[in-house]
Image (cartoon, rainbow, N blue to C red):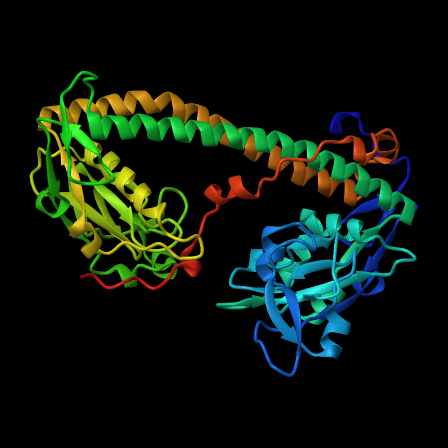
Length: 475
C-alpha cells in the first residue's frame, strides 16, 4: 500500500524543527488555533442534588481509540453547567492529560457516537475542532503520529505523576492541510487501519489457538503421564481429577520451601541504576522475563533451576525457571525443592496449570495475588522422580514447536504495528500524498468490520510496578 504512494510535488519549510518540510499548500497551526480545549473537573462521585450522567474516563480513552455511546461507562452525577460544558459531541477528540507514566499522556480517542448523558471525565482534555477548517478525525490521527505526540512527552512535567498543562496542549504544533484533504487522509488511514487490524486479529487468533494447544499438552502430561493405557485412581483434588494409580498426591509444602528477597524493597530501579553490576535482579512486574537490571551483589545461588513465581498484580501466579546467582525485588518469590533430585521443570508445569485453574475463578475486576499460605494449601501430583524427568522432557519437546510459531506470530504483529505507526506519521506530516489513493478506495459500507484487537491485546499487556498492589503479607 505504502509503496504506491508518492511525495507531494512542492514542499516548504514548516518553521518547526521536528516537522521539517510540509506540502506547500498546508498550514502549520498551534492547537489553540485548530480546536477549543476544555479540561474536565467532573469526578466519579455521586451527589443527590446533581443530574445522573455517564462518565467517559481515562481508562475509556486509554484502551479505546473510538468512543461510542454503547460502551460501559461509569455512572456518576454532574451539575447542569458541567453537563452543558463537557457533554461529548461527535467529532470531539479526547486525550489523556495526567498519568503515572510520561508516555501514557496525550493518548487520543475520537468520539464517534454520543448521548445526552455522556460527558468528559477527570484527567482528560476535550478538544473540539473548529468545524470550518478542522476535522476531528484528522486531529485524532495527527495526535497518533510520533512527531506530534512527542511534543506532549517533552512537555510532560512531574516526578511520580506526570501531567500536561493547559498551555502545553494549546501550544502543540499541528500540520494542517485543507479540510477536503484532511477528509481524504482520514479516509485513507481508516481504511489502512482496518486492514492492519484484520491481519493482527488473525495473528492473535492463531496465538490463542497455539496457547490452548500448549495448555492441553501440559495438562494431560502432568495429570495422566505419558502412558495412554495407565490405570487411574481418584486424586481427591477436583482440579486434578483422576491420576495414574502409582502416583502420589502431596501437599506442595512437603516438597518445596519458599523464599523472598530479604533486600527486595531496597532493589528499586533507582538503586539498580546507581549500583550497576553483573548479577541479575528479578521482579514480578517488569518486562524481559522479569529482569529489572543487574547489580554488584547477589542473594541467591542455585546450580539447578528453581521455580520463580509472581505474587501480586496482573502477572500474579505466572511462573518460570531461574538458576545461577541473582537477587529478587518485590512482587515475586522462589519455590525451591527440599530434595535436589526433585524435577523443577515438571513441577513448574504442574504449578502453572494449578495457578491457571485458580485465576479462572477470580473476577476480572480483582487484582490476583498469591501468598505463601495459598501455596501451603496446594496439593500436587507426584510421580516417581524418573517419570518426572521424562514428562518434563516430553512437555519441552511438545511445546517448543508451538512456542516458535507463537514467537513468529508475535514478531509479525509487532512489525504490523510498527508499519501502522510509521504510515500514520508519514501521512499526517505530509511526507506521502494519499489524495489519489483515498479517492480510489471503496465506500466504507462495502468494507467488512475489522477485528477488534482489545481482547487479544489484554494478554500482551505489560504492567509495571506502578500498577501493582502492595505485597500481601505471608501467612
